[in-house]
Image: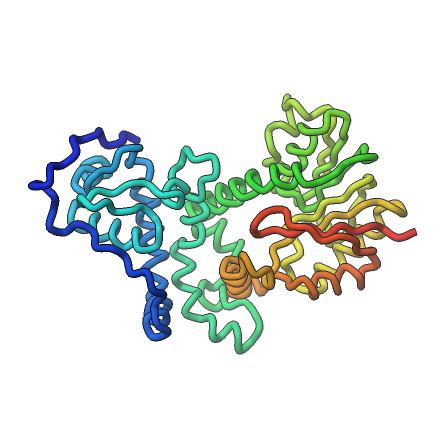
Length: 362
């Protein structure tokens, strides 16, 4: 997208009368905090609007006025300034004393070309169906089950692929972005001394596996997931990909069986279903693994203080959509132990993921 061109700095005489006032330095009182919370939909909608309009892509390194940006993204200047003013309250863009807007660390994450871009994830979390299900959270809390079928007449994934094709594409892009970014963290974290084979169980398109194979040239790997998922595996792992000679792809449901032997099994962000599915998956790992095989289980935790606002929100959305749940550290440890795995160290992968190091017992 075309970015705005630099403009001369305004003279004091041309400084707009609507220049930004200093933000208060004292924290808001409880009544104001609650008012801000109940208007949370406006905050999410503002992020979505900025992402859809491509404002972050239009803004270059030089601050620009709302009028200059409006010409690039083809919107009306006055409401654009209102949107930018709202976003800047939360650190997404910043308004300069002379009334121009500049990038912040958060606003850059809405750019498509940022290596850590959260644009697709921001769109995914604010898709039209989300606005339909959130008002029914009280019903989900009363019943303990998903309300998605009650609202849309069919299950979440069925609706996504039959009735919301654009949303399904955004979902795929968002999950790919998230997986690619965290895969590098996982590859950096894991010590593969003595490991010659690794299996990524329920590994999606195999970004974690590909990152590990690239980092360890002698490693061989297996990707296992549902047939429709592995059919879209990372290009590095299939066809004429650079890692295909060291890769095996297995189509199957890990809740039914895991026909794979490896020195190391990785399970990342898939233990969010009902307890029975989680239990069967973990027991299938124990049944498949040789005594002493390592199992690394990677999950978001709802009781992880630094990321609780994020993980507890995901937990509620899982309840609404599919009746699933994120784990506390204790609940995950309990399920791992009940399956027969021996738990060792628990380490942080990044700001929102933890890895549980386990071993298949003798």
